[in-house]
Image (tube, rainbow, N blue to C red; front, side):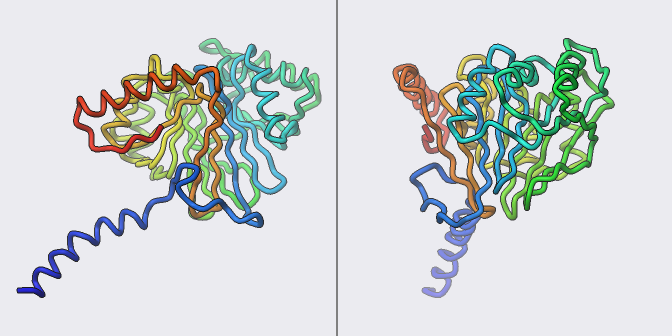
Length: 313
């Protein structure tokens, strides 16, 4: 009898232990920091309102992914400089809308250096409020090489593998965004641009996009397709927006037990040694009261809906 009881307890405990062993994403302070000599990949998410801009670094390599609207060039420039970067080897644009590519000309004016620019759209692409022609014209004036890439191509980035995932057969400019699937050793992240609806379902059907961290598509203002979210199955998500106008996506992530941060609260830093991630955010002091109020509301919503999740703010 005692033996049967021991086996039953073991069967109940093992899944819990396995889940703990599978944990890859930690908030700052939850785990030991990386050793000083560790080769760490860093992803800085700029604090932009409803726009995308991220800076990746690994060893001596740096990659800018999108860059926000033209009026956000100062934020991108100053934040990048604060984190020690004023030059990137490559800049990648997911799609040529103002909130992803608009800041590039002003960044160049301010002295931000780009060695090479990568696009997955035709050089003369002019549909749906595209800024492709205008921005590429400014890059050409500066003598910056423009490279066209496509689905399945890889962007050189040290030991990390960065693969472009794109479909061009359905939807508008947003859904034709070039996503980046990034793997560094055993750590992974998916940067989704603004892919929506049917395109998300197509990706879920055709690809294995399992990733530790998800950059929520379309700034969190559109619902994530269930199939897509289940395919990626992230431990953590980044919303490149604030808490207003993203309530539905917040609800989705809460129900799935996926923690998330808002980029509008301050720069988000994602770091990995290829085995685990450490997530940190430098929150703006002036938003303190707003953040406290949101956290209280979050806790009320969690209790009201009886969601069995930990608070992560």
